[in-house]
Image (tube, rainbow, N blue to C red):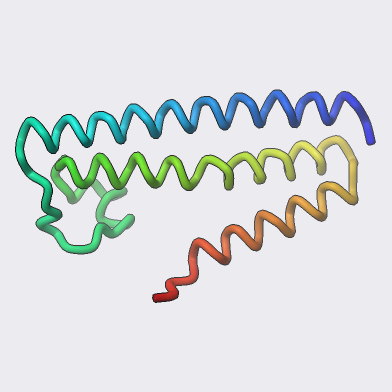
Length: 116
């Protein structure tokens, strides 16, 4: 195990986690402030669909901003594992690259399964 690769993984993880948590906190706080100021606590569109959100079809509402905040919070560790897998592959550390890729696949499958 190359210490340079591990140093890069740790640095990348720290940057991704701190940025993701901060961005999520800002979005959640903004959504809560918007809900308090406007009094709008409902989601008039029912289930928020990521496709509609990305296409720009939805107006900005407190529930949408909260949804984005929690989405960023959930995506942060997934992005961290993806970054680690990439750095392990790039650093030619095969065993850790395979393990982190497997973990990434498990995370993606578990997030995409719509159980319940």
